[in-house]
Image 1 (cartoon, rainbow, N blue to C red):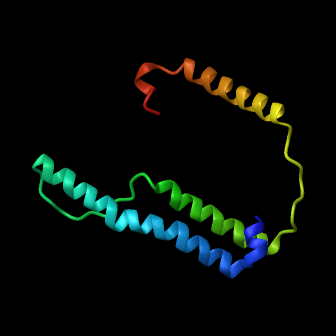
Image 2: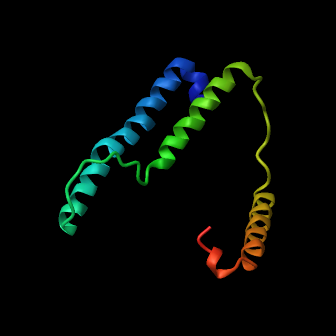
Image 3: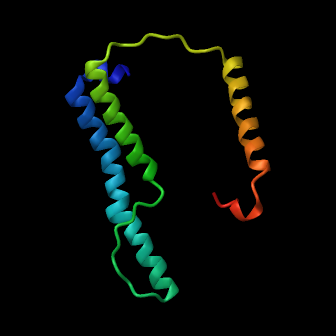
Length: 114
């Protein structure tokens, strides 16, 4: 992205570690466990501290993919391509949803959790 071109590798990685990693750690180490403590206390269960990844698991994956991109971008040649037409994207999305629905129709009820 342009931010990596503008900042350079080191500052780009530091910025992403602070913005994404900081938010992930804040929730996982502080906010998530506090929420669990309140829920356990309200339910009458023993109160214990647990590391809790919870909903921001996607932030960790976003950080992983961003760091992988930053490393690969150091060695790979830049790729220039145009954005596809919105109608093509819409048709591709419709095809994917139809394919997903078509595969889900024949799934037995006891396998629905997958």
